[in-house]
Amino acid sequence: MMPVRAAPASVRTRPPAEVPGRSAIHFDEVLLATERLARWRIGATVTYRPLSDESPRRVAQRLLASLAPLAGLRVNAQLLVHVAALGYDRTLLAEVLQAARAASVAVTLDLTVPERADALMACAAELQANHGDLGLTLSCDRDRSLGDADTACTMGLRLRLVHERRGETGASRKASADSFARMVDRVAGHARHATLVCHDPQIVADSLERLRAAGTPVALELLPELPHQGVLWVARTHHLPIRSCVSYGRPQAASHFGPTAHTPRVLWWSTLSNSLGTLLPMAGHA
Image (tube, rainbow, N blue to C red; front, side, top):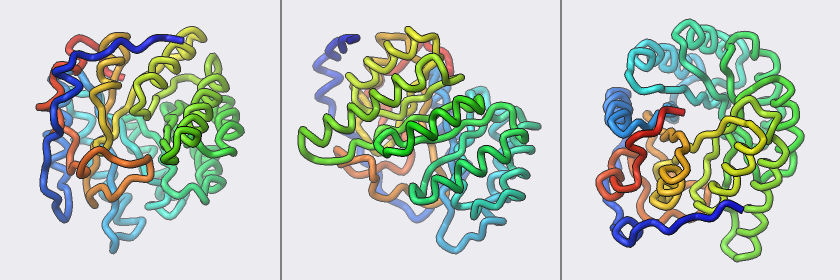
């Protein structure tokens, strides 16, 4: 097991910065966020959270409009697409994927409605030919995800593996960690690339060790509403590429990834001032 070296006390004890909530986040703010992240050589995973009255066609139009600006950034920006927001419409998805391929923007399909996992897998299988750098989000806490991971590896998709941190008891947290470990063992040596969406430093360190030993490229992706100092320290210590998820549109609601340490942020860069010592000054983009 790869040990996690303790971060300096000054890093561990700094209080979080607070930012007041707002009704919507504009795309221009995302561009600013990705440029700021680039200063610390952190890549960006950009996602649009649709407003309540937006149709799938309108969501597709917003995604299409974002591609040229994202392609022009000096940071390596990827697009995380909420397939449910597009109504699992193959025509709309194909249009977005083809435009993203033309703009050289990597795309990952997101699992936002776990009950529609079959529909998500069907979309990935049918539309894979529309984009040569397609990724798929899987929740490691769900029983069916191991089989879905096998299918995705066979298809040659990048994997975005999410640790949901379900449960409040020690036993439930251990079960969640064990589920993540089983997923990592399943895809190690088989996945084209694995991105770990996890904020547990020891889980990240152990997963990194397994994946690298099997020759699987790996990166870390951070979510804005969860504590990040510990995993940033692991990433810096082990030269792990980092991405940060940056969203626009509807602000992030309460997360299903477990209890947050403080009020959710509107944009991730608002937390940087309290953790600059743990950033990756020399690492490459994921």
